[in-house]
Image 1: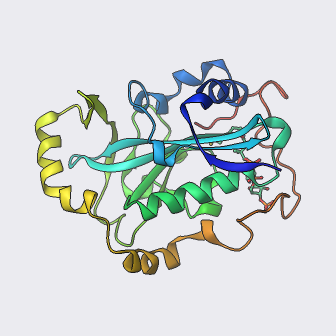
Image 2: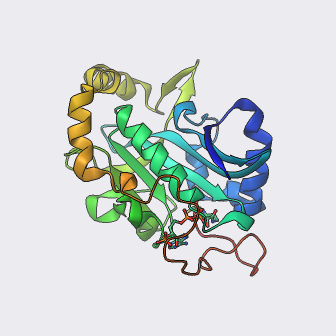
Amino acid sequence: MYKILRERPADAGDIEQLLDLAFGPNRLAKASYQYRDGVPPIPALSWIARDGAKLVGTLRYWPILVGAAETPALLLGPLAVDPTRRGEGIGRMLVARTLDQAMLSGHRLVLLVADPGYYEQFGCLPAAPFGFSMPNEKPERLWVRPLAPGALASVTGAIQPRRLVRGRSMSRRPAAAARRATTARGRRLTPPPRTDLRRLMMPLTPASAPGVKGRAQSRSGRSLGMLKPNGAAGTQPNCS
Ligand SMILES: CC(C)(COP(=O)(O)OP(=O)(O)OC[C@H]1O[C@@H](n2cnc3c(N)ncnc32)[C@H](O)[C@@H]1OP(=O)(O)O)[C@@H](O)C(=O)NCCC(=O)NCCS
């Protein structure tokens, strides 16, 4: 039986191996990796699944900025489950746990790149109709998951990397980032009281629906053949 755990530094090697297995050696060339280059994942949102000593799943999130206002948001992924352990609910456990964690931490918006089919069950919506875009990525592959009411109304535009400068997270336009940090500081550093968060979560947490926790088998048992293990059919998942 697998366990969902916070990622530790010692997991890094196993995670790279699993990502290579799931996405293939060219994964670093995907458009979404421009947002990960030189930027560490967010530790509180980096989770793994282990079965004994074996790493069977990984999910990380990266900080990004959105639009001219450089609004902070999250980039979900990569998500990968060991090819021999797919269909057991591991991916769903990782996504559900981390979306809840992100919401409780006060994050408002998650973006991700994927083909249709998997992320809709977590409340993800096509992002292009809301005005989001990712340079060098097909618009129909960009998805958004609001974590708070009104989150989609106040943010739109192209995704930008969030660079680290002297240990601090900065955009490529430091002056604008500094202005944004000043104006948004209250919201970013002071999440709403817990009771408010719980109320906000009610309609927005399909990840918390019954069946998410502790399920070891795919409910419907339908084929998961859309995303083949690396090399199984000579294809790589077109997700990142
Ligand atoms: C996509 C992936 C993470 C799914 O992980 P998993 O642990 O096998 O998925 P789960 O068992 O949690 O599936 C949960 C539900 O999603 C469904 N599902 C799984 N993969 C799916 C897919 N590709 N499309 C649509 N639905 C899918 C399952 O059938 C299940 O639904 P059910 O309970 O109603 O049967 C895994 O297949 C993987 O690592 N693929 C390669 C890498 C990849 O594509 N990552 C995603 C980046 S976009």
